[in-house]
Image 1 (tube, rainbow over the protein chains, first blue to last red):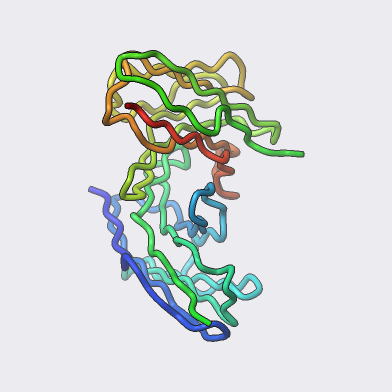
Image 2 (image 1 turned 180 degrees about the vertical axis):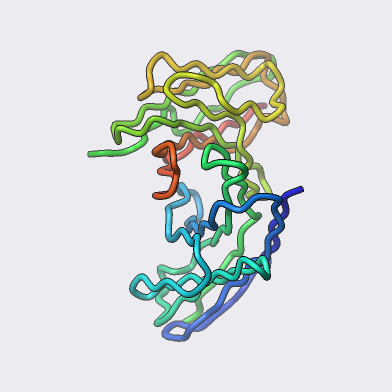
Length: 110
Length: 113
């Protein structure tokens, strides 16, 4: 079957670095997504990893280890606007069906 | 603006009523989706259409009927609404490969009373 595990909540300080972990199980692998969702808003695409390693995009980086079924999202120089839920997700069998984790709610304190 | 737009944003209705939510995308994507996000914030896929054809139906009650008149539109009609249907419904679209991720609409908050 398919399963995604990520922490429910995390808190971090403005200006700091935070790492949000995600472990997953799937019978077929077609990549791993990270999405950001602010309260009351739509999810927005952050990253898509297909190969192992770290991909950096500005303050956000995403890491993938396919052999370990593990990914993390790294957020640097945290800002108050980064307070949001971060959803780990993967396509099941094809990109026509993305399975989302329940999300990690990140709170940034001054 | 290029986007996925869905209407209405809020919908409050009584049990037993029938309602529709409309979705349109002008991104040139060929695949569209409906997702349901419940009170625990779990996003679950309901339907997926590619070029007007249904490709995924995730054991959703047949009170829910999607309709895609063309590849830029995917509407959701719900019959005989129940209390448990209260949720936020998101429309989304993507290219067939999905590698650029999905673009989501702003959501429709449905409250059944």
